[in-house]
Length: 471
Image 1 (cartoon, rainbow, N blue to C red):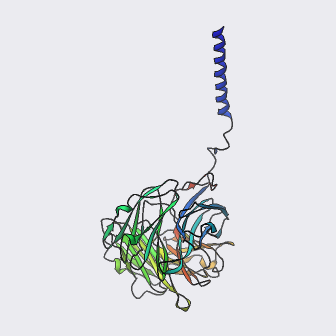
Image 2: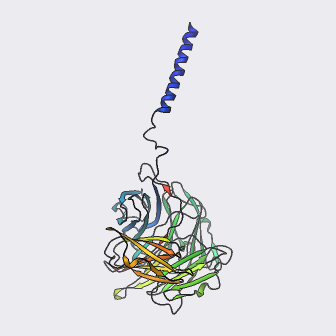
Image 3: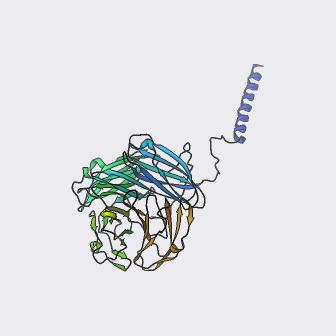
């Protein structure tokens, strides 16, 4: 009897466990878990290493060129403080500007911008006083990408250059940082294996390692993780942001002949670079003499385009089949009363689609476009503002001849607040930038490189702060 009773109890237990298993198998999933076959919203992430200085304001400018609204989450990364988050929606075909929160006004900060839906591009503007200089700086933000990036335009001779690194990922990144100047690559032990914390920043002063060098390039190699980087240049009469770029075989840097131009070029490696280096102007192309004989490794070159360059946009196009090269440009604009400001752009790979966004208080906007190829191209421009999307007739099917540059005025858009432009080239790929001049409340000049739309892997993004976003 005892045996039968125990067997019966065991059978009941087994049936109970089996029933529980069947109930779990056929019961609906927990509401805390996403459905495995739920469609993901494509989106992406932008990194903005420097958005504001301590005690000064900063602004993020966003443009959505897509046909659906974008859900956006901005995570500000302030020094020695907890991150601060803003969540909002940016309508289809709209541009907008958000200011940095008052809670982080006292400290320097960067930002991570994540979005779901739409086609979003991001830039920023900051005003600051540093190393005897006061002014404004603006630059496009960047997507985390290549394992090695270079800031070609830096100096430690009467200029303070800081490398600012941002890690948008959810795990720490480990990087090696070196400084390239005068034919050598300085690799301080203290800059090897540096950790950029997950969703954090790292700031390095170039002058702590390379002293009184007129031309210094910063090289950042990621051992693990993906980072974005840039240089903040500060001196009397100079406040500028210079985005880091990945060294590539073909690069174009575009500037304006306003008040004096310098182009920067560097190759990092063991062999000479450059099989071709040309200047591009509205009058056509010529040889860029400073690079005509090639570019030795670890030797940054800084030089102007030479005499006889017509007024307007001017670019340097460089191609190399031996070693990749990084380019940059910086130029002066003279304003009312003789005030001067500088603007800077990063060298980019020519593309058929590229976009940029600039924010207020710009009152005069110009598109600088370069065609580095041997065939003509036509470019059409889509403009998005805070009021919506337009396709101005004067900006459609404009011809950019082979080996030349074109300047397009964005008339009547200076008072439109935030302005985004999407350039679509038919024929040859192009490179472009926006030059913005602000005369109120104070004179300032900014340049925003148009970001090429290159093949990339979409990520599934949920801007709900509780769920997190893969970067």
